[in-house]
Image (cartoon, rainbow, N blue to C red):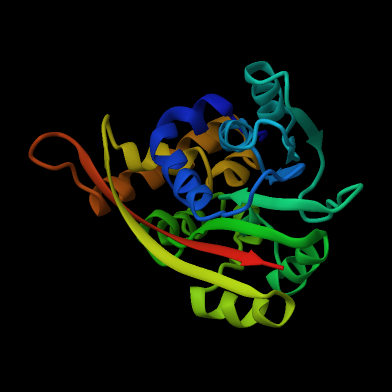
Length: 254
């Protein structure tokens, strides 16, 4: 299943807040080349272009549907269809930025030092990744996948996520850069609608699993997951639902 821009944008404000906060910690004057890895619909790429209007801003993503949405919104920017796990620039960048994408790439031990080598002198690698994998949003994915008639199909697709804690990223990147600023933030998000946490997850971590099933099985799997999620994240008295969601941030200067 390809990425669904409309589903992903359903909670765009909550998804964009970490991107804004990450960008605020990137201190560099007038870069000429800025790359957004895993740019998706381009909302974070637009932030980069607004921050540095004279820079060549490039968005890289492996989803044609997401890039089509990004290109429709910002035809003035540069969009590249490529797997971010193997992407390499034609020339060094001053800023490599990634909002909620690098967790889809395995082996951060290899990935992150390699990205640093693609920076120019004093260049900055800045990324943010979700860190909710021990919470029901993610643990119930595996439980639901392995306990239904779709287990043989979905079991092999379950991942061990590569995300580390801030101190681990500091140790990993420290030998390759001059400075590392790493931290973890938990956002308590107030969501609206019927069982909104299930809809939130449908736009991200559930995507490859739903795409591996027939339409009928995908609907049944999502319904089973949604029932569990509704119990794990019940609605508040005012009808909204609270979703605590943690993220890890890293800003490394070469």
